[in-house]
Image (cartoon, rainbow, N blue to C red; front, side, top):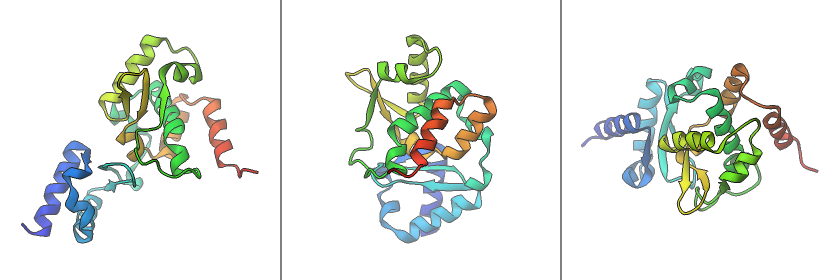
Length: 193
């Protein structure tokens, strides 16, 4: 099989599945020429290959040039789900990407208990409402429900697919972002004394 045929098959798999475990695409991680061919083919149709050290998945998303606030509607998420998603991303992922903390060996090791989450979220979140939203996000690989505990961890989509500036803009437009989240972002960006 030629490198072009191999790249075409990988691109088709990535586009169809959105997330593919690294162990199913070992050659993509090992072969720089194949990775370049896959990246070029995805780029030609406005997509980008997603990967992050320590996250055992490859993903695909819209190239930044084509992102807009409507991309989140494609995920079937309303502004309340997006507010929850942003809160979880800030709590579980952002400190590793933008902070000084090293990437954890297991990308799912950082968790948040659902009762803690409910207490931190602004507004009225009944337990049944929170559970419904958690289930919706878990079905789409944004988060992972921790077995045997009332907690969640970041799923591969939360690590790979969030372009946080686009998400923030969408939430501002939909008035789904709260001042507490904006304050958290300002504090994270300010230099620490």
